[in-house]
Image (tube, rainbow over the protein chains, first blue to last red):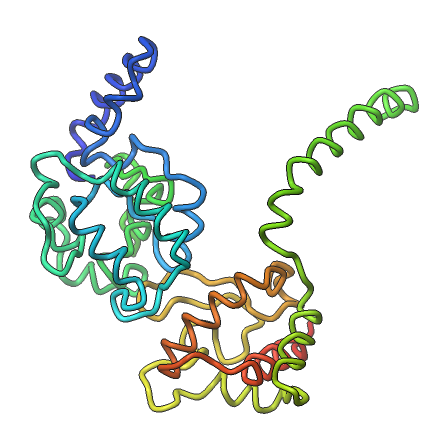
Length: 163
Length: 142
């Protein structure tokens, strides 16, 4: 999503690394800013995609995620509280896969992915009227246009903007 | 499928089933399965009074002075899919007769009553209120 042009090359590089058996230690670094690289864990999907798409941790830096995870009872206007053991488990995984790539290192205002500079830049061709369509409704509704967002895949090839 | 292939398949299927059960056992212990009726009985016992479906419907559809009611996301009669009021994500039907997954995991039931009652009523619901809502949902039949 942040830099789809790098997606295919990234995938190829990952494939080569996996083939050479070197993938694991380097994976988080490679995955930065590219949602497709890190498979979302079943627990993350279960707990973090009940109300919205499971946003890949690589889209924001750890500091932003940690503020979110430490304040789940006040989660963007709703109570998303979880038991402490689940918070700890999810936070550990999120921290391991949070964004560190230079464009994702920035902590966005209000810890909103949609307020990051790269997000705004990537979506600058989308008109205000398009965002307001009932079929889209909100910039946080990735899957309205990124048809494979629920798999953590934001490849531009899979974008279909609904009427 | 002829008789021979059936008899050849059966022991393998049985073995697979046994393995699956063994694998599921720890999960089943962690997440106690229960029917909606069992959970209703639990909440009613905790409340010490019988549940009222009419009161449950009232709670479900009222805004309680806030911005949202339960219906804002689940629909006024939750027999079909709802839509999250802020994200637009589809939410499966809440009435158990229309969605057999509903109210089968008490921990999940508690988690969502806790969160959603805080969103709608700005406090947790009492056992009696949960019994009322669940009893109403259980009256909704195809």
